Length: 281
Image 1 (cartoon, rainbow, N blue to C red):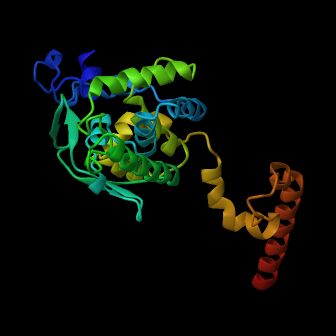
Image 2 (image 1 turned 180 degrees about the vertical axis):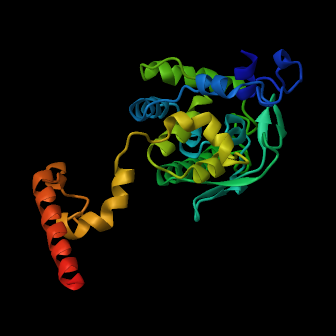
């Protein structure tokens, strides 16, 4: 329980570990690699779509949840964002602070990084800023607050409200068994399952080393995909069996006639053998 609370940034330390780090067994966060994998509960792509559709009905938190799902940022990192951190021209966000326990501090790793912004998120942020300009007039702020995700007074939001709004959107989507931090896990697992380089995912998440990402998400790396080994045969098969076809070809058109392939290979072998015998003679 404390390990998950630490991950969600509800507490700053895990008293269950006694402050000790046993070499080769537990990481600094008090979790073994097996426990880390067990604690991950990402959404499927279909469930994420349902959740974001439900969350979009919440004008205050919908974009916040979209940001977590599209950038992989920690909840506290997104909550501490300022408008000056966002570069919509290059579609990048500077991540250099974190909100935890109502206080602004450094990121969990103490490092600064840039994360990429998807087109959907860029458009949502553009609309959010326009909305903030209207609110500045309506609420008497004078100018747009520096915080991207602010309360009605223009200050930092109460972190507990994000969890309540998340659960509300989750129920509206007909889902259960997830927490806010799982949007970060969902971001990572969907990218890895889609074939994104683990180095890219690690950089987006703010992991110091790709091995950290691997510890958490190895289970979601693509497996049993014979296209990887088949790619080694590309130069061998392309001249004979038409593997240069476009990606739009149907699967039935891509299926090889193995009987015909075998006949051609045997014919080629016979020709090569005859040529060698002729040269040797």
